[in-house]
Image (tube, rainbow, N blue to C red):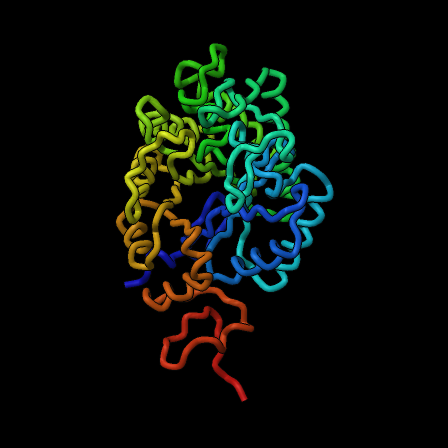
Length: 371
């Protein structure tokens, strides 16, 4: 039986060789949003992994929208030029498609890098004033964020559009909006972070409004050939927070807008979350969104073995699976999965001779002839 994980799939007009996705993984390694040598190495490594799609890390749409002072950004020409050069170099040796996750961190912005504690930075520490739907801090004791005005919401919509356009100019082949993990778009969805009394708060319809406005604005700005998806948190894991019922309603609105995929994660908006961790713990959410909306879904969360990923696709829990930490730990995970599942994988010809003797060929297009 052929492998479901290594079967081709399309997201909008974008064709993928397999259903393994390199998940967006923040690297906190830029200077003023500009990537350098680390990203050249990191993205080249992911492009050589055999994954069917690489999604670039959460990319800030504005200086204040970054999670940390070291996050990747795409709001100016210098960033666009640097990232474009890196992607051009990687494409010289890999045809792996790249998507970009574009994001505003909201009240979770102005944070230290994880290896420096990850806490909110003060202005004296190089931080900045944060923004959010309401003046409610992420954690007790933190400086409250600024509650966004209507004019500021319009500016943020425009910033999402501008970043998406820049991404297309440097050849990014798909865009994913980040509406998960407690960042700004998720904050609008969740009653925990959104206590507005205007048209953007209160009812479910109102709390979804800004997310859908941003989606519509970006979709209108993108060429029809560039797919647009979204990452969402299916639940806050907190009583009274954003939940699966709201997620399914949001998914129905996204279906009406011909969203090309939904990347289904969870949590992140509150330190009070109680997550039931376990292998594939978020796949039931992905399956519920898939069955309710009929849209392609990406399943994430402690998917670590080829057999587990294969089962998720074959059993209809997800259309694609995304790996993050597992792919950093084992950068050739897709190669190993191809061996275990009797499939083929794309890999640079420079690496073909690395295949151990006695292992069936897994490199697509490989030729054995050698003097």
